Image (tube, rainbow, N blue to C red):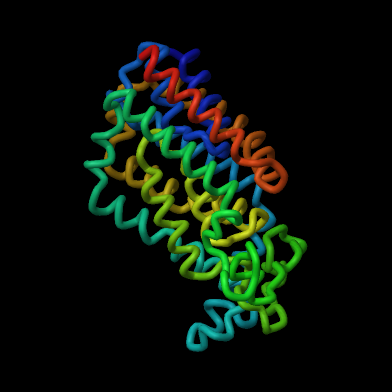
Length: 316
């Protein structure tokens, strides 16, 4: 891989990681177009994914700092561990992120080799997965009409959160719904704290575990799954981006410890340039995607994924 190809693929990764169009799928498409063996080395993918994680940390730095502080203040995890019912909203949010990571942890522990074998397989696998992504995005845009996650007995086209009379807490100083910057508890009475329940967090986590396959968009799958479960757009967008931090950083750590990084066939300069370009593009794409999820229909991304899939089937 040349330094120019590394920059192009890094930019592609950074731009598509946060957009619901599958960054892994686009990386494989990019390698096919550049004539690079898609299955020869997965270290580059790990490096550019780590770069987008770093961009996420930069964008959500205030929120992450607020969540970290919430674990140590009154009613936090480390000061009220014997009384879980008293946990503040910040701790509650962190625990829900942990719950969402359970499925992908199981996949990483027991099915890592099987997943890696899929990377570098036929480009038609990516095309098929893109069609699945397109369908998920289309369904999520029509979740209320389909009544997925809704309450049929007491409301019309409302999610369980709305049906219970809960209105998500407005973003506080830290920008995450329901998470106070000082970790203090919100008034009781809300049906679902932080706008997402533990079972919803787990189901979204299942979406993330499935999305390890190339062509299935991680952000698209998790956001679509959350919307179909009744989670509001302004809640699921940041949750989707934050829940991936630990899994990707953990994967990068295991690559380093296991010696895969040293055995990589990609040179140090392409890895560095790919990392930097993915990081810069990720900063831009992360902010754009948060705004798009709140205001724009995901159907446009669904159409894009479907068109790309059809083009692959025709010309590949």
